[in-house]
Image (cartoon, rainbow, N blue to C red; front, top):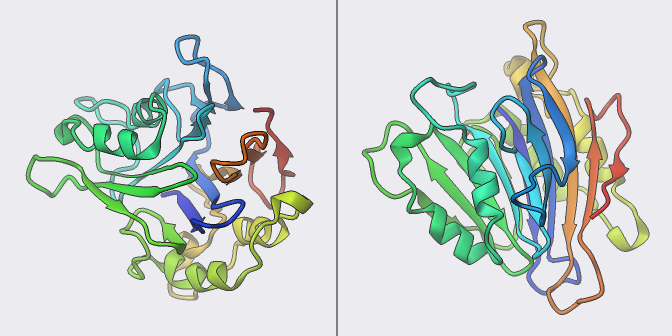
Length: 252
């Protein structure tokens, strides 16, 4: 499972801040965020070399998308499309509302279960697809202002040991300050291997296992307010476990 934390502040100069850890099989090949798709030159995202899609990225219009598996759905299925395609499809749109509406009309049966976050500087949406549901539209929820957290469970669902432990910490932590290039509190959160005693390794933010699965990269992103035309988003990326690899700025 992966982790995504979002701080949504509609009236702030930086209304959307996102922190994300990607947990995956260590031998699954990938490339750091870049303009990897000739047919999508406006997209900067990590490339999943196996599926051809992405797990997290943004476009030049300031739309961001990040996808997570839900519980019990790690890996591909022969009769399903890659969930990484959905990130790219979301980034085909110029605003989050249009993207969320478009992806709510996909055929849920074509994909394994997922949580998908789509945001721009004005709105943040959570799209939920569970394989247990009857076929129909993907559920779309607009997230309220404040700090929200997603793993392989529902948003802010304390059935997740990781959410139970880290959501209060995320809400109490100092917010990143892109103007001063201060991301330290969230970098520490993403790097933490602490877990509740009864949660085992899955309760940590930064996952390490002996079975070839764990945290493989981290991202930090800030979106400027829409009226700040001359200010670009900020994307920082750690191309490995965030307790071992430094975050570096990604050119946008």
